[in-house]
Length: 322
Figure 1 (cartoon, rainbow, N blue to C red):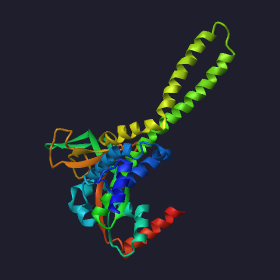
Figure 2: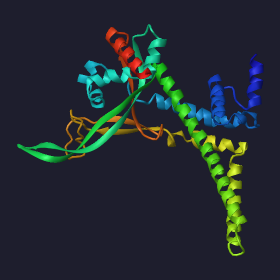
Figure 3: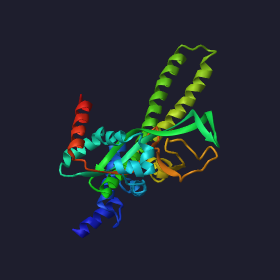
Figure 4: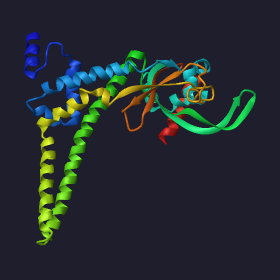
């Protein structure tokens, strides 16, 4: 059996250190971008390094997400981070109750009473006018920058932190592969646009006269050259370049960006107005996951099967299902 596996590894250009996880990830990535790539001579060897690089990066990134923070009444009162990201304790419960991922998780794990998960939030920084105490004098209409969070979203819940982070890692890897798919899709869209423009140009050329024809023919020649370049880029043998450009440089496409801030109890920034009271809170933004950046942290929630929580969760589920 070992000799057979060794032969298969040599046949496909893999080595003894390659794991079944890597094999599966290569197949998953290639199938997501273009299934026909599995019929080419460069499969799977050409995809081994970019996929293994992206897999390792996604795992390291998932394990770099801060937390887990415990979210409950006590932490809301004692933990400055928890207090900063939730407007009130009601929002803590609402974030979990309104999560479809949590609803599915509790139905699939009826015996569990806790969950670890990734939570993403939209951070809003807004300038308002407020009051400030300067010595013994209250100043009015003072510009203040208030920071608050909305759209709390819970994803990838699991019974343990490791399981949750592993699920997050798979999501990060899938996101990176999705960027390869988008690169290819953009070129396909370009080709369709070029073909459409060429049809319009041919129609204009058909109706041209001796004065306008030379310029149109020159434009058509340039368009044909551009179309040939785009067509060559869509040859299956060139697809590994897309995998390498993205998956060998994953930090350019998906990363955590720490943003330290000093906030008071009202969420007003105190590190940009000359005062430096208090310790900075570090918010980590997930850059590149989608069009807008998410502030992310791992969370830990307990007592999920309590009668009150379960009843509220069921109510939320029914309202979301309508």
